[in-house]
Image (cartoon, rainbow, N blue to C red; front, top):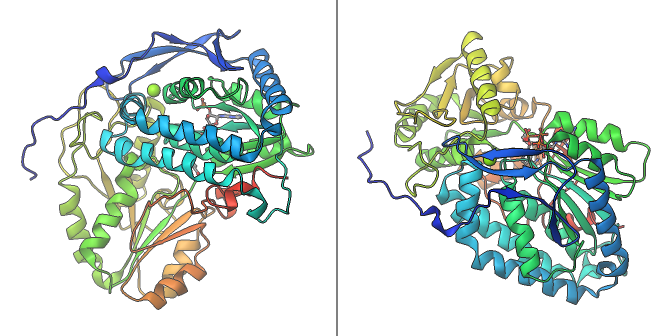
Length: 475
Ligand code: NAP
Ligand code: MG
């Protein structure tokens, strides 16, 4: 059993949450025409704020503001001037990082040590990185005078609210596009704080517009005739619907969708390091990670020993208050997501897999799920095929490298994979055979703005990050 830690909560007083928020259109907060909805803290179910739900008229106003800003200001600015705004935004994000991290953890439920040490630093890094590109676009490999597309409609999910915003907005602005972005219904608050940061940075009105709402708002944005580009991160199901909506138009599309990554441990791997990587792979961000290592493939000869060490390690994970600096696993983002995790876990048991969780006391209010692993999983089990998007690991075994490759690739997805072995040659050989956009070797869930990220097959198309990420926003 882990020894007791005294509570070490981060103070909420650094962030000022308003009772209600409007839409950020043309540089100002305006009342929407639609209804409003509530965003809650998933760890306490406390209502945090009322947020405006953008209807079609609001979407239209935001797209028009973005078009005007594109035509009159942003596309006319030299790259070095756009870069200055992006640098300024990056600096303000760093200055206000504590506020952003606390707000993200409150609205999303993720542990403060992750929002503070992972999400927000990478958000700032993305703005710095693409600021650097803004005046060097002729070296991006898209011709000597690359041109922006125009207005981008961007839709993001709730698992990394501010990070997904950065992945979308930073490259778009660097290339000279203007944007209308819709955050997820359950996590709008950091996007709205980002809107304030745009005001603080004196970003010209209309370059960034933030419209809150649910799926319907996203649908109206995708279908709007005034946008030139759709950038979407979310589920494969909605991604397919978006692809159908834009078919036959000249809108460019990038889709970052789901995943069911294999994390493959060979018998020569350093097992304790692999255990850490497995834990990071599936329990980071409560497993609400598109590239999570949700399928552990372990070589049969070391399976027993690895599982014993993994269980011991899982017993030390602390589940609880997202604002406590000792917390490893925070709250599940919503009641709907918790229901889905419970349902798929029950199906795993019903289909014959062995379920195990360490003993852990869950808070009585809010949405919680213990770190869980399933053994004796086969390829046919639904928990081995479907994205659970929660802290649930399916364990499968293999005997030969070719069996590992076959099992790893036997999925409709292809976003990421992990390989644990001592042999460099095996790492390269596996990486060549795995049909996944990112292959991590002896590590997992490492993100960097200079590295492209994206999927094969039903994990989507297009790349975000790095020089490749510029292609999505240039003609
Ligand atoms: P989702 O239901 O597809 O939602 C994603 C976003 O699309 C949200 O803002 C959502 O709005 C909006 N939306 C819903 N229906 C829409 C429609 N018909 N037209 C346009 N927009 C619509 O996905 P989610 O459950 O929030 O997120 C989890 C999924 O995202 C997982 O499958 C995960 O793998 C994937 N993901 C992928 C990546 C990646 O980079 N590949 C990264 C993170 C997450 P509301 O939320 O307000 O309803
Ligand atoms: Mg919320």
